[in-house]
Length: 215
Length: 219
Image (cartoon, rainbow over all chains, first blue to last red; front, side, top):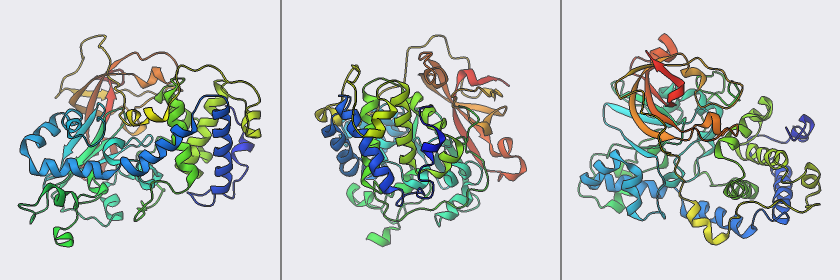
C-alpha cells in the first residue's frame, strides 16, 4: 500500500459524503493530474473531453429513448429483450452500445430492481453516471434483502401481489429495467413517452411519471 | 480482497437510502477530473478494470466507509500510480513530476474520447464447453480467497437455479491479481429470497447474481 494510514486521515474531520472535503480533494486531485500530465501519461484536453461527455452527452435521456421505442415498437421491444446491446446500437443514440447490456421487463406481476452490492456497476451508456445513492452503503446493503423497504425510501409502494426480482450486477453484464407503460398514453409519440421515463424507473427504484403530470 | 467492507449485500445498520432531487452529475469540479483521470489512466492499458476494483477494496474499511465515491477513486488512483512506479509519493506530495515518466502503451487523445464511451467487450473464446445449462440446480461454493472475487458473501454456499448463460468472460479473480484473463463461463443464477435470508425474506423475493463457472458446483 502506497500511503500510510496517516495520509488517509490527514483531514479526518473534513471528509463527509461531499462538500466539505472539497478543498482537500481539489488540491489532491490537482496535484495528481499535474504529475500525470507532466509525466506524459495523460492529456488534460482529454480529461476535459471526458468530463464534457458525461455532463452533456451520456445520461438517462439515452435510456429513456430506448424505453419509449420499446413501448411503441413491438419488434424493437422483442429485439431489446433478446440482446439489448445489438438492439440499441443502431438507434445512434451514442456511437455504439458496448456488449453485455441486458434489458429486463417489468410487468404488473413482476418488478425488477438493479443493484451492485460489491461496487457500483451501472449501465453508464444508457443511464450516464450513477447517482450517489446508487453507490451508497444503504442501497447496496438493503436492495438484496429489503427491496420493498428501499422502494419505500423512494416513496414507491407496489401492490403486495407484485413479486420483486433483484439483479446484483456482479460481473460485466449490465442491466436496465424496461418499466411498464403507463395507462392513458395510447397514441403518444415516442418523444412524449420519453418524457415520462425517469432514471429511477430504469433502475427499478421508481416508476414512470404519471401521464397526467405532463399531458 | 474478498471478505472486505465493500461486500455490502445484506448488511444492516446503514440506514435509509437518500435520493437527492435534481442531483448534479458532479458535486464538485474535482470529482469530474478524478473520474476522467481514472478513465484516461485505464486507457493506457497499465492495469485492468478488475485491478482497479481490487484497488478500491484494499482501502482500509474506515476510510472506505467515510470517503465519498470519488474520494475513493482518487485514493485508489494515487495508490496504483505509486505501486506501479508511474510516479513517486514524493512527486504527488510535491504536485509536480521530479523524474521523467515511463513509456506506456498508449495515451488518450481528446479526439479519441467519444470512442471510449463505448464499453469494451469482456467476452473471450471458450476453453471448454459450458458445464451448466438453464434450469440446472447449482450450489455456490463457500470460498474466501484473500484476493479479489465477485462472488458476494451473502450468496456463498447457497442453492439456486441457472437462469441464463451469458457467454465466456474474463475471469475477475485471476485478472485482478495479474494471473491473466483465464476466461470462464458466466451465468445468471437465481435464488429464492428465503434461501439467502431465511424467514426474514418476503416469500416472493428473488435475487440473482452473475456467477462465473468456478464459483458453482452441481446441487
